Amino acid sequence: MNYSELTVAIGKQTFPLYLQPGFFNTDPTGPRLHKHRYTEIHLIAEGQCEYLIGSQKYLVEPGQALAIPAGVFHQCITAEQQAKKTAFQIPIPLKDPLKKTLLPGLVQKIIQNIEQTEAKSSLSAMLALVCSEFVQTQAQIQPLRDPAFIIHERLANEYYMDLSLEDIATDLKLSRKQTERLIVKHTGNTFRNEIARRRIEAARHLLATEDITLAEAAERVGYKSYSGFWKAFKEKKA
Image (tube, rainbow, N blue to C red; front, side, top):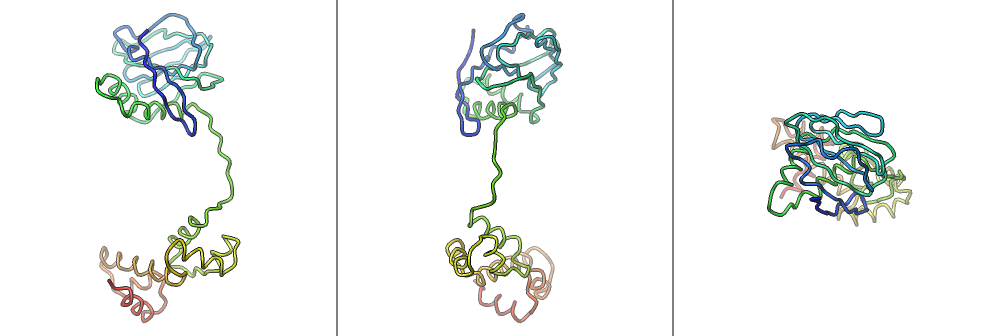
């Protein structure tokens, strides 16, 4: 048995992974009917391979992965002559066999990495990416709480609109005074000055990248008065 052991991180957990680097060879059908202690994942780089898992057959194409639950009898029953594949085991729960199509070129990169003699720095990350296709991770959706994110997102997306301090205070469920303090903390400016800074910054970008007038730039970044824009533009000129 020519196994290598790696550690892969999937979400917040780490798992040992047992790689079969010698599994791709001139006789790719591998052993006869057998089962493993852990979930086994087969990666096909070239040629089609057909597997018998329990009583069901699975045809696996290049660029696909087939995950076989622990304790289930299986075997590769046919493989095209040019078939090239590898496999590994990992202690992750899996109820039923699953077949997934992976990112283009990922399996080829994995096998190339295995074949290299130098340090395989990216192999664990690539194999973790494969495993993540078969691991059910639970994420609880919660109301947005991060005040810095809320402040920057509203300013970034609505600086050219009639955005008010009250709008952000409502999102944060805070008073105007508390909200102003947070804006200063996270931007270094008062609400009014930060809006002006973002508008002028956007106007300078427009003037540098598009053939428009100052008046057109002023309108596009939210100024209703050209004189107000010109005053701010001169004040914030580097």
